Image (cartoon, rainbow, N blue to C red; front, side, top):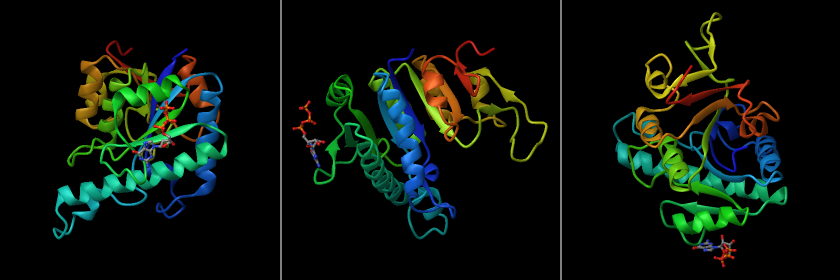
Length: 239
Ligand code: GTP
């Protein structure tokens, strides 16, 4: 069983039907799934995206807002989600700390890795907000970076699908789920589990990536127990 994990999910996982805002029922579902892990003594770090609030690339599309400014706006979006998630986890009685890569002391702690590790040792969930604190990086990269920094055994990328497919399962009915694959496979154009920067970082540090369905009840606990039947595992070995 993995003792310390980093879970990354997108901002859209929290969104209302229209893809925006925050849906309390989704917050509750995610929080209750995370509780199944902390109940087993597993130490959990979280990174959440900000796409339900604003996406840097989209904000910059018309050429008025610079890409770097758009990305900073996106980072602020992740802080909004982190605070919502903190409340939901506390609703279920968990101890939670939010640490932001961009200082905003009135709202949350600044990111200090040694302090984050101390929180985890004390069985507090740590939510890492504001991405890496730098534009032109994704929250996937932030998640991989934080996973390595805190010494997580796994990074779990929670998505809308049951794992990695050889082609888009929403477009192709004959798409095949891949149970395990290499980092190189994960970088291929038709697969693209995460952006290349995050996969390269995971590869360099031999950090296993698990891709799974966010909304499959009980799946997170199965995964930390080594059951990847409803997920795909990305490692050096692949098949
Ligand atoms: P220990 O030192 O291990 O007991 O950790 P702790 O987080 O309980 O203690 P601390 O006294 O550092 O923090 C108490 C509360 O204040 C916690 O809810 C922290 O998240 C919060 N806190 C600590 N530092 C900051 C900060 O810089 N900004 C904000 N907004 N909250 C903070």
